[in-house]
Amino acid sequence: MIHLNIGSNLNSIHGSRYDNISIAINLLIEENVKIKKTSNFYETPSYPNQKLPKFLNIGVLVNYKDNVSKLLSSLNLIEKKIGRLKTKKNDPRVIDIDIVDFKGKIEDSDNLILPHPRAHLRNFVLYPILEIDPKWSHPILKKNPQFLINNLSLKSRIEITRLQKNVKINHD
Image 1 (tube, rainbow, N blue to C red):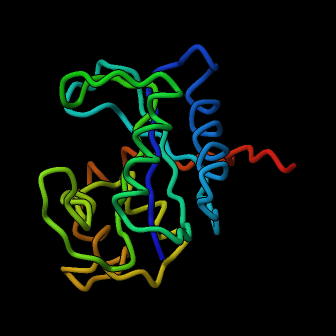
Image 2: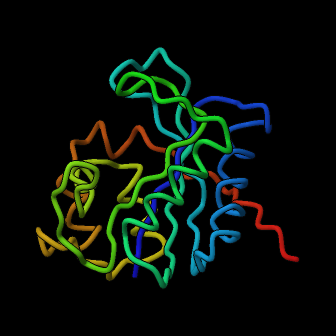
């Protein structure tokens, strides 16, 4: 299986943070990415500057026939279509799509590190995975999401809110 995480903390010309994430999902479908499961939306403070707008994130479990570099190209294209501009690290953004885990692959190249190097430290990655794939195991650490969540700081475990809201998928 493949785990993606999609986040947004700015409105775009397409609408709200929710709209940006929903559009990203629908563009993934157009790129022949098979959506298996999506988590609820999760809201977290912006990091490291909590004065910036809050982030919305979802976890997405997908199937994809092509290789990881082709998926990465598709994700970059989708981010551009929605209006993402490459700015400084941790700056607010209309959309951010990360590959958290690609079929358990371990890779460290100039343009991609798998699994995502900070996935095990991020509440907004771990809680959605726990919701949609509780038996997932981190490819390097060999630990499940609940174990990794238990190792987060108390602050990190309480500053995340699961919203009872799901992504809108256009069914043709």
